[in-house]
Image (cartoon, rainbow, N blue to C red; front, side):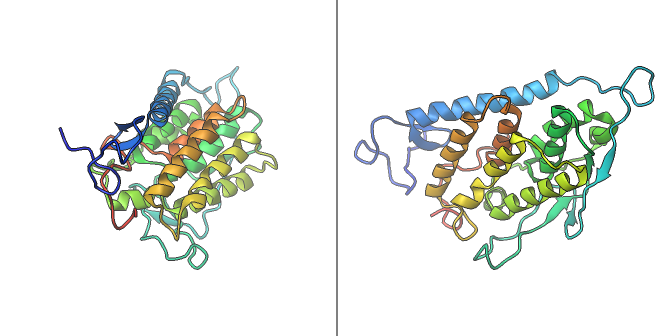
Amino acid sequence: MPTKKDFAGKTKTSKTYDKDWVFSGGAWTTQKQAKADIANKKEAQAYKANLSAQAAPSPVPGVPGTPPASATAPIDTSGLVTSAPVPMPLPTPAPSLTQTAPDTSIPNWWIGNAITNPSTPEAQFANVANALLPTLAPEDQRTLAGYLSQNHKDVFGGYSNTDFGSAPTAITDATRKQYLNPQRAQLAISLLDRMQKASGATEMGAGYDFLKNAINLINQFAVDGVMTREKYGQFTNAVSSLTKNAGQGMSSYANLAQLFNLPQFTAGPLISNTPNSTLFV
């Protein structure tokens, strides 16, 4: 059994931590936070399961007695760079967010369309989910794209045959920088704004506003383009608090916020207990 260390690499003793702290998920945390993290993971897993379990085939366009295909409009991607079909690449964080424009690369498999004048909550959510899709972790991209392709075949059916690229086999500095970089949040906000404009909707609802606020949490806890270990702990607490206090009928958007801010990887946790001198101090 490996020696349990604290964030500074020192052996844990009763003098360095309160007795209610436990070693959970590769890091030291309080028992209360450990329970909250477990509950959040179960919630995210249940959400993913429901996407597949509850997915029902969409009406077939042109078949009598079924609704017509959704009208769509292309999302303006001028100024956005199309990348290879792999998770969105991000450069080394800039020294100052105010001095450097955000990276604006999107995967070339993305279906850049929006349902115009969405009249149902399901259509509104589909637009939001698709806009956020390029910025998610690859395993979450597959899950969400599967939901879109099954429930909105006339618009997003193409995702059923999409190659999303390989998921990371190991969590590296580059992975952490990619998913905790404020430029990723800026790209997500840009895509959401462009989607709203393409859809022609003047009001996207409380879920849309909630999601944008959740995405902006990365900007709030990053320091000069990166997030310290201390700030990451504050960031995860803020995400948990925001999603738990989401209003009634907001669970889908709260789960989207969870997928964006706290991506899960089969290869392991995004942040481990091993100190990282280049990214975390």
